[in-house]
Length: 397
Ligand SMILES: [Zn+2]
Image (cartoon, rainbow, N blue to C red; front, side):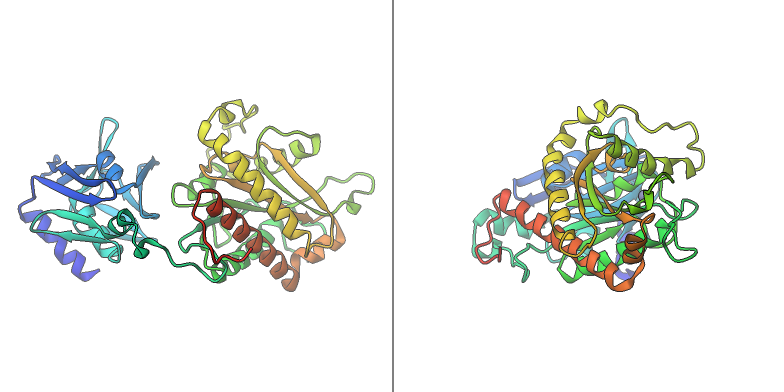
């Protein structure tokens, strides 16, 4: 980053252009450059991101700007940004004026051409950002045909893997797990294996946690926004003591909707209960009715995709899991409500059953489960690509 740090000095003392041109898929867009309160050059985010086919999400004082599927996070009001988990300085700050977000000119003139050099070029003389991929697509040349991975997938998919619980929230106590092993340990072990298996299949992975730490339920879904294809939450089921409760085993996959059965409602209540471990969240109730969420059109749009992903996961798990398939179910999981993309929650087995307990804590079978999940996810992504019309003639079925 030494060059970029040096270059940013130019923005402090130098002359800012009056406008910037974005040469993208939608032709040339001219954007006026303004000076913010500290005299630093900024651009209105909305027209800029429209020209770049990007998006922005503002939460907790951060503006997450996604361009070409890559998220840049700006700390609003401070000259800092995060890319690829690295916190870096900026010459100016992202700022809010009313509802409008402004981004430092440096984002266009420096960050995009630096991090996404294969796609963006910035010409300082004409103050023009060229999107080279957009030009190729517009021409419809063979250059626009993307290369395919061996499994037929387009490169660039991102899946968020969410190992349930963590930190002070142990999840269920793991009755038939080895001593000291709880649900949070097993979800993390299988989550890390799933990351490995997905990466081997050319799918990018973002983890909500990769260590033994607590992530609030309401924050987990945020890891899967614009640039993310699917949110997968991993859990282990358990039953309260009752007659013959240790005999129940098997796996089930949920997507978010109103619970249809008493048992689905029970599982949702159990997983939502993790909210009590979040400090300062004592009075935040778990949403009772899901009406308000189901009215959300964006979410409804994802319901069918989520159900399809759940179905494929169940089918693949059945080939490696000796317990029986308890099916695809729907219930009101808080962790799924915040994902703005298709989202599923997998209960991989019962820790209150001796066979499932062994299966879930043995390395070889953990690997088999992770591999089956990864296969199901690849199948889902391939279906999805086909559905949205990105036909790949050579793709194996
Ligand atoms: Zn759980």
